[in-house]
Length: 261
Length: 261
Image (cartoon, rainbow over all chains, first blue to last red; front, side):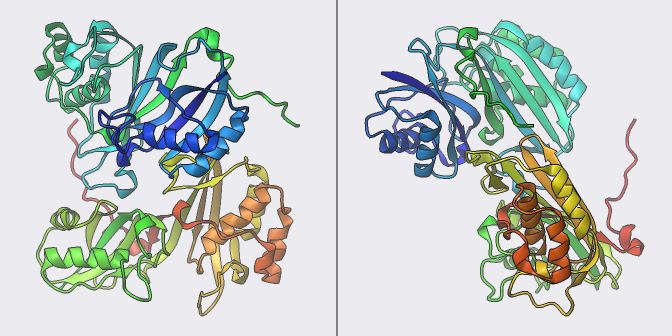
């Protein structure tokens, strides 16, 4: 039995998320079906973490077991011929049997993209959120310092989330202006239901001058969701990367070929 | 009577182009209908130049005449409420009656985006072309020098094009690697049918090492389409900007407001 891990990119807008309560038009379902066609046996995918309805991924990871002797490149190529254009298997690696796409995670990075324009931008309609007015980047950076670290993030969890503990560690928040866009990168050891979208919505409210940066500190301490901003729309959110435990890193990278000249 | 010009962004994938022979699901039709709803009179749009089936625009220009007293911002906002998300009126300006969106053009810049990856990228499926292997940027730059200048570009016109003369001037070609993408920007005084897509397809063939840069010179001199590369797919092409005659520039920019310090 071999354990393989796939790296998947998807545009979330046409799906109910990675996995829905009622299995129906989910990324996991479409992907599983495509893989079963190629592997000719039942496939059970274990994902690094579910993404919600409409959320995108640049590098989502999922593992599965197989007796097939297919090459990792052959699997990518084969499965992609069975997938719609909004889902793609980018890479595939063989990993030890103690690797787990969910439990071997050390950190995840989410990216959120907003463009600033008084009029809609068709090229970015399905991949970005839109705001009409510029944001104060410095104020948002100041507010982000209160979020970084280990905290009880109860105030940053949407209703419907059920986590054993609401304590999480946010390692870093990077905020930058890129032409007429603002990009937020949030790295942490794990995230509660809608947590990144509430973090960004709260930082946006600070950047709009509607609440002072210090209020984010109070929001965390008092565990009061109402002190923050709105939950941002899903289409601007991307699971950007997943960092696995050190001992597995050697398995999770392309085999280096000698480059000519 | 006032003459107004609109700046339009659109994602071309759902349309037959700006204007098709048989009026049917074109950007011009959808836009005209939305504008008529807002202005309550017939609108005739004159465009800087038609874009083909599936081609995108970041800043397409079109002028029209109206007796309406609507503000330029009011027109943008109003029309956008009547448009689908893949078409947007970004800006609107009042111009003198001798301005013509087509005949007052001095230069146009087209952008072509390719991503390089052995597997498909869902986030870029509708907005980029895909190539499997890296391109030699230096060789393509060398080849592009033969294209820059005034030439008879007969070899760069697709069948179905009907132009009085096939002589055009290409002012500049900028080619750059941006992460895993290659971007081509082609600026000229006008372009023949499919000319930019054939220029990029030919440069790609050079960048793949399939033809030497010098062959592009022969292609132009001998007017032989067969010496070049394929016509690239439409979804990677964007009308990026249109430069108008100097005397009109003052009308085509947002009114500057004093910024608060």
